[in-house]
Length: 303
Image (tube, rainbow, N blue to C red; front, side, top):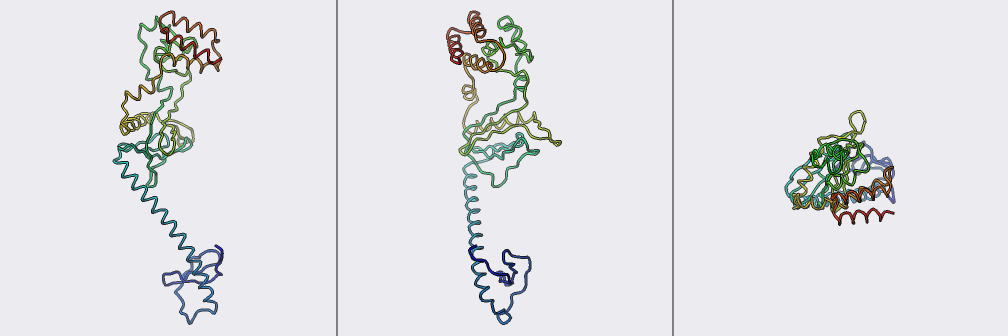
């Protein structure tokens, strides 16, 4: 404040007086003194108090106006969002999906030991996209067994991998990608991610959190929650499962090249060996002429 009232008793606006210590109000309250009992400097104190009270009332009014504005906006968004479709806890975060393509997210971090709850002031956001990326361990567990005919085509190592084994041989990665199987890490991680893009921000949520003894862990059941949230989000956006699959599925040639390039940073076959492997796959009819040409071009482009 530009001016502070001296210490003393001042009217509190409710028929009593409260003691001001010169910098803050105290808890001391007394009955309001009559004008006859007032001290000689009561007029000066009263004037200072009037200024002080005006400043307090102004700040209080501005705070209340801001709260009213936020409540009005929240009510408008709630009306636009429609009915709640589903909600769930993923890791330390809570997510709500609404029928008209809106979402509310109370985002927690991997350092939280309990899920963050959605409250009255948690904002509504317009959903743009939602995608669940499962852990490599869950992908490997869900992979179907390889057909017997495939064993004679791409080799025993590829068949072992597709059946859930861990004998990853570098030379079999292109053949594995051509068969339509995602890259499987030898050391599987349990970390899954739910990515929610809205008109306000991008929420990257993890299924991991700290358990009761402070160790980071993940709840396997949260994967099913994330899939339900993803499906509800797609339904609210009017996106069919077929559209999602078409957008996310890469071509065979692209999978081959991207996998080979990603593995170049780690010890493994040389560029010449990778080129020979592509040629072998082409000769055996696993790669078409176009796929072989595209894969070779992508590989050479990394030089």
